Length: 482
Image (spheres, rainbow, N blue to C red):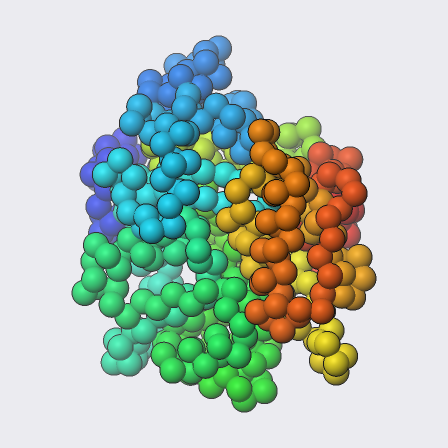
């Protein structure tokens, strides 16, 4: 029998096949075995962080030598980890200045930073930019988990069909920056060209008619994108302009409401599965046939908490969630405030998966809807298209986009220290204006906000604020800053 300690020692080898097999085996042994593995991995992560990160060594100085319970650890957040970046990372070759220089060059997307690491920036949907460094062990875990999820989602017959039809995968994602999806896809295609020759990346900023034409030409068997984009593509499929026959549709980054999931499934005549994660931890939970997201407990810890970081019970919506990524070592993410609100299902999911089942509100699609210039139809703009546009703009520290009228946007902006506020505001206005023009929305006015981004009483920001509320999940309606 493989003990949890021996299994964790094997983790260090960074083998995706080993991760896949261990995940299958430990889940067959039951929840107790999964929790044993989680505790052992947490203990090793905390010990490693203490031994190699000045930030965590200081943060954990008063804690016991061995920690197996995440709830005893202090909370961290993006601003804290970015402000003390050089102290947080565990490899002295990784510095904030060097990473900033690296991501300033679009031509280096997907290259190995310092010859070893993948670098990804956040896409701006939380209003503040983040820089994240991911090691090969992390990617071995992600690859192994994706293989396991694929086997859960598709029958053997469907897997055979995928191979017969060539397995073409199309991802509609944010490009033009070191965003996780495009950086990872670019590196995989560069380093493993034969394995990933069927991977096609489509920019989410591309005008919808061009995107539809490109997808029709490729005819992907697997289609993946953000929930807001899939909703737009489903409408195109229903109209007959998009003509795809995928075997699986994968939704990421934003929550797909249940009624919209059904609509997307009907439009494409294919199952829709969701992955909940973020740049800091790509695969935290994955959906089942019932539409719930099940936590991947052997590699991620999620703690739903209230505004005081106290645990909330199942059945109650949280104020935020704390995430611990048990895979990445070079930049430890431990008890990290993600900013999402979620609810844990109080009873066992009907699908039979015993892992906690989640409903996430924080990534609901704040899609901005604009009328066309002739007023005869509407155009929906995905939040990540706008968010990634601002993320690529130098000098943007924090932002909030408010739709103040059907054809008017106000951009509340907090420039980075030392940046020329006038130049930053002009660049933001031009960037958003160019995006909207490409979408046929040149008549939409973009104005600078008269105030900085506004927080809620709980201290959180809502980055996209549509003119009218969109249909969302069964949570209490958020205030403007949630």
